[in-house]
Amino acid sequence: MKKSSFVNILLSILLVVGAIVVAFLLYTDMNTAFSRVFIIGYVIVLFVYALFTILLVTIKARTLTRAQIGQRLLKFSMWFVFFSVIKYAVSSLDGTPEISFAYFALPFGLSFGLAFSDLINKRRASS
Image 1 (tube, helix red, strand yellow):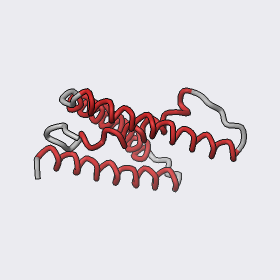
Image 2 (tube, helix red, strand yellow):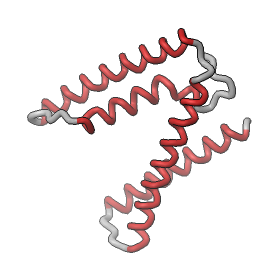
Image 3 (cartoon, rainbow, N blue to C red):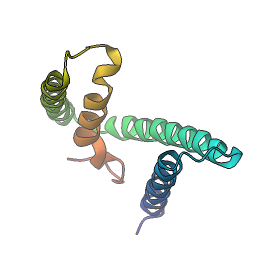
């Protein structure tokens, strides 16, 4: 196993364990200094890891051909429209859907992950 893949898998496992701990702390409404520091630290680590992942995908995507980038952008666009329509339909069942810039964050992240996530663990970016 490549060293970069091992580090990425280890970080992913730590992020999942951290998410479980944060969910437990929030669910039990633990109001201690440790819980606040842990949650703030977890959010910072999550943000830095997300930026690192986006940077890594961007660097590896530079080696793709125009046709491969076009295919991935088409896949991204289709997933984005699909998830946006699903989110709009579900939110309209709850009441009046309020559309804002933050409304599209979840469909954007899911679409980006589905279209470009295979670039994270590849040494050479070929599709």
